[in-house]
Picture: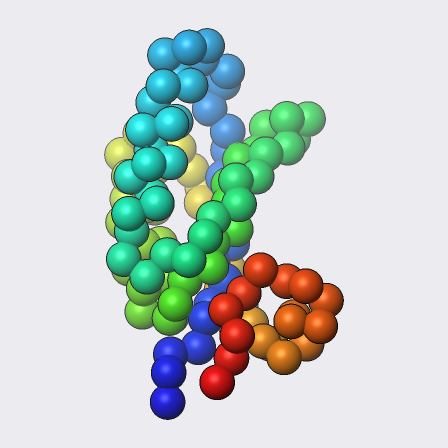
Length: 107
């Protein structure tokens, strides 16, 4: 039986806007995240009025999501960013396919 895709939803205080230097750093971060083992995709989120940032990630498996969560939470904490909220959700593939959700087909 194949691993079941899992969503990781992360939310944390946003960094203040930082211009071109920050834009370059975030692009490098996005390129690094794209190489994470088990990552299928990420949607970047922000809510400027609430001062929040984060992402919705789809991983191939719960262990891959948990490994990324631990690494990214440590990275953010080392930068003084927190508290970090994280939630895991399994995907209902058949119903998501009907509503055109971007998930791999289930077995």
